[in-house]
Image (cartoon, rainbow over all chains, first blue to last red; front, top):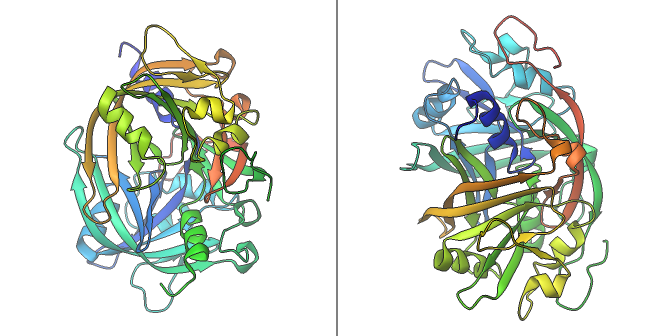
Length: 199
Length: 199
């Protein structure tokens, strides 16, 4: 607790390890689009298909939360090496749409109201289920349903899993460091007494 | 919703992207140790330093949750290429301690009651703050305070951030696929009108 706040924030943000990276795109009630990078998106359940997102209180990213509360829909978009610099830049405090400011392109599909990010290999159309505020530090936990899934077909395996190396999905550590994944192995379902083999 | 449940589970678990991987180690009231891999650990706040963990209802990993509710303490441990196969194996339904079953080694430091995983380059000693059950699917969200931080010094930078590539921290995708990270870049704080440079 005695550490310099900058040092402290860097350290604590790195402690959980690599984090998922998604661009969340929304539209406000006036139709102005918004897009921002998030590293706090996680799997909550497969049936129904739910994701959770944590929103920090009082940050520049608050627009995203307000737009979702107003419109009930948003998209999640994986980030690739050709998108991560714009994704990072989208977090700046732009006037007007971050799509214009940071040089990202909107894409609309199947009548879904929120914009997808063009060129993203995994795009999800989601609708709000509920939010709750964590009393401990006023962080907002949002739970949403995954309604639409668009995946670049080359990265979709026969068993339903995604080849994130092939899709070139980017992961983030700390506040500002971007990485690709480099596969070690997939391992068989773990059972006592039988060392898991590579699959 | 019509997909085969195995296919569906694989797909939905991959959609958020790369996930953090941590071994959570605990001790039950009788002193029997437990260790299991988790991909649902995330940053909640830096001041105070808080982590969140999602526990699925009715899984084999329920021991971890019960031990933490009983003893109020646990450790988080990053996984490396020399630990990931044991980490995966620790998820099997072992009789007795998974440390013994999967071949991991306990380490005790500074009087902290829960075991750390020996050889892990980032080890955190945590205490329970609160839990809440998400009504939407009975998932349990646990919030914990980070009390102790042990980091291999070579991986700690002057600004407090961690070099996860150097520490060889492993990340997971889907249910069973393990990866190393390969840095693209660190980017400067984003400001409107100024393209973020590499730092």
